[in-house]
Image 1 (cartoon, rainbow, N blue to C red):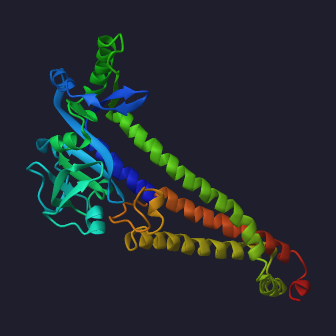
Image 2 (image 1 turned 90 degrees about the vertical axis):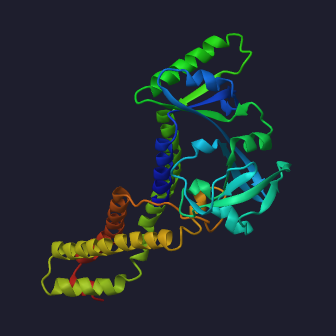
Image 3 (image 1 turned 45 degrees about the horizontal axis):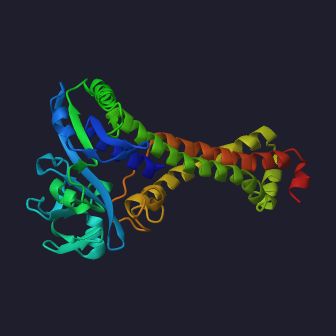
Length: 350
């Protein structure tokens, strides 16, 4: 849950810092490359402050799937941090993620090609900071022109990013969609797909909430199975417990007092075990970087992530851990305690 919340939080930061409107072509309900001829039209629209073409694609760097991002040098986000080297300035310059650099022992100045277009040569001029966004681990950042040449998509971009003045995003998104539908009545050109920031944010939240929900469901199943398991396990030490309860009853304890004692013991046990479980989770994520489990939330990273796995420990899951611990221990012991406390002390001490 902490990993899921951490990734979602980092993703939403990227969305908030991103464009107000994303425009692509619509091929059968999916994003498709859009013509760069739309750039001038979008720039002239009232309320638009900046229009940025971008190319985002995927290819293999040896046997590792990498993300290619091509942008104009003047549109490089200010939040990008480099651990070594510089940003691209000349043709063929690229900045490589720390994950790829570590796995393939890349060095500044190294030249390489990619299988998708082996005739295109690149030169490593910088590395992303390992503590930067998780999306930069297997990222290759290059100029927009280099990306066009590499993917052989002259005159196209994967999407066009539109930045607007406050309050204009929703109006402009609707206007662009309306103009696109009116300008191509014969469908000679593919329709445009317009997505504003709020829609992209909902996509992110829905996706991560769904994945977190899957693990919550598994946690609930484990919780349901743990109740009968505890009922069985609690019987293993029942002989000594029966004798203890029998002695208490013989010395004048009432059944209610015995039940209160056991309930207090379970409360203390839960109050100790739940924070201990959370502490172990923090150690697992902060010291061991979410080994073995992070790959279920972040694809293509293997057993050990080459970057810092983001995590956020929220109060509600921590509270639920304590509540579940109380319920499990109570269910596993109160019934057997009551059953023993209601029989004669002599029989209980046998």
